[in-house]
Image 1 (cartoon, one colour):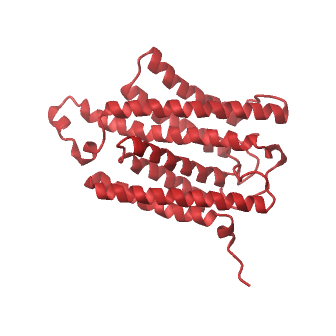
Image 2 (cartoon, one colour):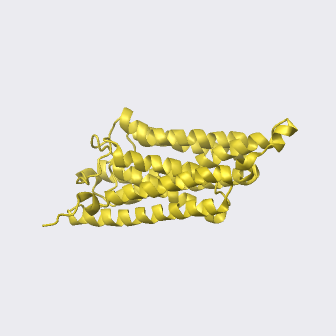
Image 3 (tube, rainbow, N blue to C red):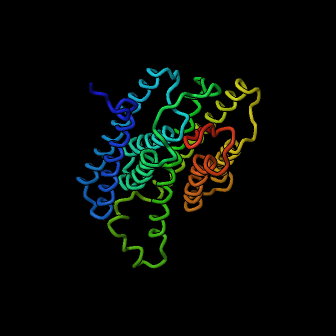
Length: 302
């Protein structure tokens, strides 16, 4: 009797397939940077949309399967599920930016980070794809809202990271003291909008991200109080979530009170994302605490 492969039943196979489409999109955007071909960029975006739709289907299959095996909440708490969801929100964030701004060049960075996240989830022994029963402390619908708000913010900060890199590259040419250097823009730089447009986009994306990060931390604190009788315990993940929040609050504060913009703002966006990645992965792997419930499938929840 035919027995379906578990990777089909739990949706993990579809995430691996989406990795292939994301990688093709990345390759397309890489070629676009040198060719400037709008046909290539449209094809790359089509592959990205396909990858996003496959991931949407994979989440649906995975969540239905989780309920069928008796898990009452969507599988969100282990490293595998958090990594594929991170890749998902990155693609979604780029799709929104692509609709409102001419940021085709950003696709190269977004698809690279998304492909790395999917590749790590699919092939790293640290992130097994098997769905495990949720421990009693996490069996709450607070979990869904907590993680979704946090990862929406992570996706926004990932987009601001990519925009920050583009700004630094574009601004270097625009402010070059040597006119001959300034005029040698190259095909890649002509594909980017003016640095002022990129700067405005960085600010808007960071503000969007900090709103959801704040909501995620507040929801987590309320959940902790109802589950453990305290809002805050200075667990390593909580401490680094606070550091992440302060990093982006510094971004907004410096812009309004000190008039920071341009390169300073772009660098904060780039460094801030490094803080996000350490909070998300580094803390689990180096400084395990209350938020690391299993090994190797450690949770990545703030």
